[in-house]
Image (tube, rainbow, N blue to C red; front, side, top):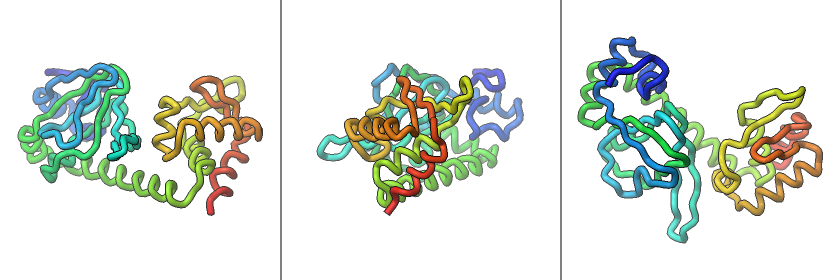
Length: 230
């Protein structure tokens, strides 16, 4: 498998960005394509995961299902993100679900071949550690928010943290997930999320236009993220 820089899973993933074009070509020869339709499971808790999966196209949600059947969204993988590194390092089987949010294309690297690549190109291991550390930091921040802030603060902080664009002089963010998934990520219910969005709208902080949110009062929204904390 060959690639053009920036177009293949090897070219777009930060894990391999420290390699030269020739080295990326060598890595790409070990990649095997996998595809899943929207809603299909990529792995389930307890599956024997013996490969690293890199998202090439589409998006993947990582979630945990409680014994009562409640789904808690943990994170969403975009093109260039990867999963399966924990099993590579520890041999542990996953305790979460990986599900295609849309039709998704992935590149698979068998763990035995990945071990050879890591030995040949140690920079891969360094970048893998960097990514895992960043995930841990994000998880710790999420835990802190879930335990120390109410829903309004979590929602305000989430909106502030989204990438912004300017349209007709307005500050706009695009909701990257369905509202039910955002509610799961923030540890609340879709009904509560809708009520809080309506409350922010009534307060003049935001205007909701489908999947777009216009932040009409950035200072006020930042205040909501802080002032509602205990």
